[in-house]
Image (cartoon, rainbow, N blue to C red):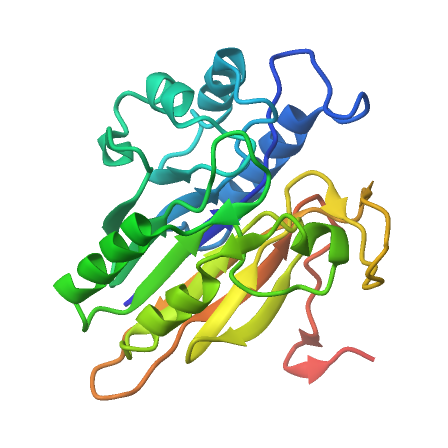
Amino acid sequence: MTTLLAQITDTHIREPGRLAYRRLNTALFLKSAIEALMRLPQKPDALILTGDLTDFARAGEYQHLSTLLEPLDFPYYLLPGNHDDADNLRAAFPHHRYLGTDDFVQYSVKVGDLRIVALDSTVRGQSAGRLCTSRLTWLAAELDRDPATPTIVAIHHPPFKTLIGHMDRIGLLEGADEFAAILNRYTNIERVISGHLHRSIFTRFANTMASTAPSPAHQVCFDLSEDAPSSWILEPPGFHVHAWQGVAGHKTSLVTHVVPIGRFDGPFPFHENGDLID
């Protein structure tokens, strides 16, 4: 059995008719992303949106996001980023009871053969992220509940340096080492997934892999100079699909695919009547 978890991040939805950075209709980009999800040959078991769901955390932005997500015919889960507000998020999605009522939006859910543990890295009014003792204690207790099920930990701010200077300066500024120390206690952590960077990035972290996903709209410019300007670019948008295939008696691991968003020529066959096309 294959479990598919799609990941979309950094949607930055504005109220209907309003543009992000005076240029981007992020709602149209999200609409295209959802259409691409629905066209996949294998339907995802669930979708997780890893933060910066809206641009200014206004109630109208969350209502617009809710409307845009209505076409999905499979479950989706929400995690706040530094552009979000937990109270307005919960108010717009009252049926998403996993969002809870505590200071932080943190939860665990089962998706097929996977467990998703969502960890809140946001600090109200700040762009950078932090993991305080309370959040780390919750994480350790949650992982202790089930040390066997293959687990993905979702967090908005990546817990590693990306070498994109202006983004690292508003990255996870506190708690990354403690976070890694907790994950190192377990052998069932398949991946740490995050957003915030508007790029697809992978690295080793805490005896597992950590990744960030691209945005369905704008991407952060690729520039590894420490003093690179804070800027965005309309590179091809995309999302991740994390696939887990459980095979009895065999060691398996999570496989991640980067899926571009858009309409492209094809598909075309490689072979005709059993022969490679000349």
